[in-house]
Image (tube, rainbow, N blue to C red; front, side):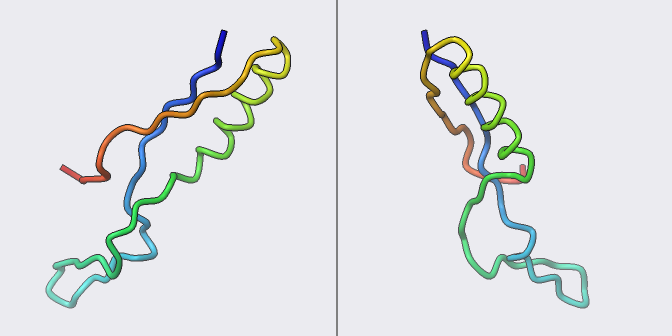
Length: 66
């Protein structure tokens, strides 16, 4: 059996430039894992080690904010 970790890539908030009129622009069109993914990965690894299984990761989405 495998432990499956599913997470969604998103836009890096550090890469968003906000203009004076409130409009935004991404400096780079790069997707990143969210801050809580490290905890999810650690949990999945712990489960896999306890059961002798392996972790399989899957990402979903395109990072679009809509």
